[in-house]
Image 1 (cartoon, rainbow, N blue to C red):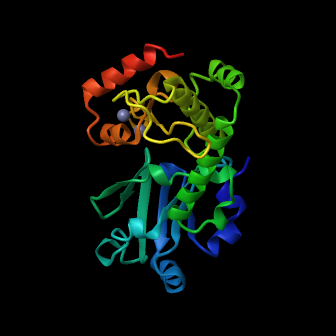
Image 2: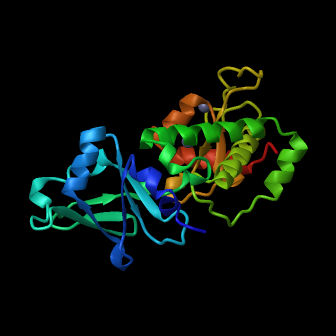
Image 3: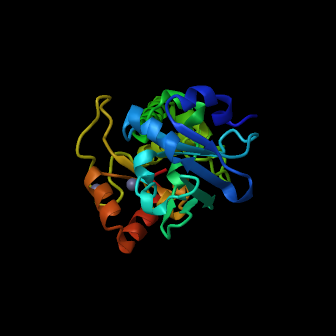
Length: 257
Ligand SMILES: [Zn+2]
Ligand SMILES: [Zn+2]
C-alpha cells in the first residue's frame, strides 16, 4: 500500500501543486514562486494537494486553489521565505499568521478507487464522477429480483461505516434506497399520495431520504431510510420538522414489508 499521490507524483505535479506534510502536526508550506508558476499556467484552475503518510493510500487532501485563495495573500506570507505555512488537525486547516480556519473534510482523498487522481482536474469533475458512480449502482439495484434484494438487505453490514466515495459505500446506499422505495409501494411516506409520475420503466417515482441525515450521524439503514415524493423530499430538506420526521419513522417501522 503506498500513498496514491506519492506514486503518481510526477504526473500530478504537472497539473497541481503537491506538497508533503511533515508528520509532526501535518505541517506544510506552499512557496510563492511555485504558486506563481501554476497561476501563470492554469489561472485559478489547479489544486493544492497535501499528502501525508507514505504508506497510507488515501492520506491526502486535494483542495482547489480558489478555496485557499484568501489565505495566500501578501499580509499572511512569511516574508523571509516567501511562503505560506499551514497545519491540519482533525480536517481543519489552520494558516500561520492568520486567525482564519477552514474545514477541509470534503477535500480528503476518497474516490481514488475509480480514477487516478491526475486525470481529474477540479472538484467539480470529482463530483461528476461520484454522481456517475452513484447512478450506476442505483441502476444495478433497480434490476435486482425481490429475493436477491431481500437477501442483500438481510446480510447488510450494519456496523460498517464505509467511507463516502468508496465502491462499498455506493453499493450499500443503492441497496438500501432501492429497498426503501419498493417498501413504500408507490406511496409517499409523508403526504401518503401516490408518486406523482412513473419513470421510464413504469415504476412510481419516489426518492430515498435519510430521516436522520447522514451528515448528522444518521444511519444508512432501512430503518432510517424513507421513500418520499419530490415535494415532500424538498420539504424535509428545507424545513425538516420534527413531527414530520416522527410520522415518517412510524410509517417506516409500521411495515408495508
Ligand atoms: Zn409526499
Ligand atoms: Zn433526503
